[in-house]
Length: 428
Image (cartoon, rainbow, N blue to C red; front, side, top):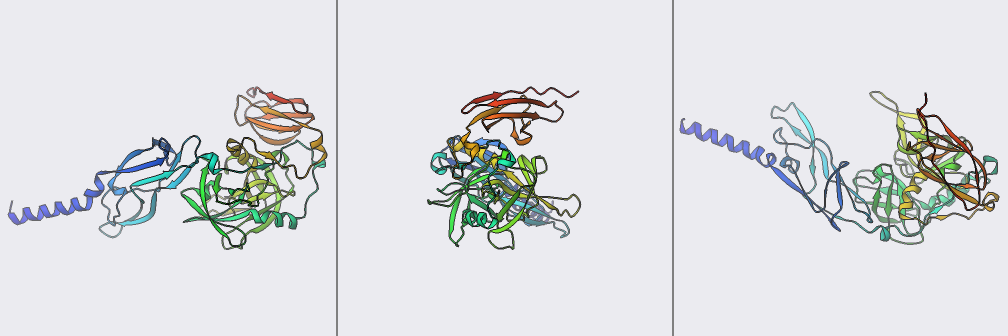
């Protein structure tokens, strides 16, 4: 081969190596935690326990403007958790960035790891989630025995100080205090890929909020700020939510004013696969972007749901369906909180005659998980669940798709604990 040609070929190969080499070989993403031994999920898949070292193509770590090399074509996030400690979810990547082909006609997007070493600090649950949660027990009361409604102006005046705006690096949402010690409930989609959020309280005070829990299955997250004596809201059980009753939503919609109030009615209560896991409250109260994570209140000023979003129509350019917003029930939030607050207090600020009659606990489990439970014709949750009912006679029904309905009349005594295990036979 002619020397000049050999030199030219070597130079071309060297240029190709320079272009592709750093991206062709595997590099290491290291994830450590304090304490060690935490489980790491990468985009929902268990990857390792800390400390761990994960191999990825070099192109996932280095910027490029050409078609050459491996590229990460989607974002990645990590969920790190350990029994007895808070859960951390963080975004591992930044992007999208753009590459362009040598001919200048083909273009594409890619993402990069922010760093090759991620350090996570997990706090003890007992230290992060302090204070007490206020919950009003469900008593299976009939509509005619319910407490009188409070004026909307009173509900808003009492609840607004507990509602906050949550500000992340790429998104904003709403949350509300559930303890006096600074624990805030919100949606998981507000907190995901963030290690912390700026919490804007009424009165323009801003605090740094640490994300201490993100639920893997429900759209729920918990945020903690330092301090005491925060105004907070009580939670109401799903058994006391009825179609047609008035509800109030408070939140921070995009391009709207802080703590905006909308009013509507409960349209329906139950499961909704389109909305996600859990029990949902459908309402015609306006829920706009930025309202996510805010409280849906009943006419006693108690939280019955966490405003989550709207369902959009199918098509090339989907639009929100009119008067159709969804809130995840406070019952789902309470089930999560009971893991950390086993002695959750009951709100007894406003007593009524049904409480004086006493109550008992009824545990309902079935071979078909997720079967719907109805008490006296009202949906109260799904199996397995423990329901507190007022003393007296109640009609219990358990239903599941493709199964015959199970029903029983039950006498509940004050202080009693009853377990039901309905067998749902296949419908012929």
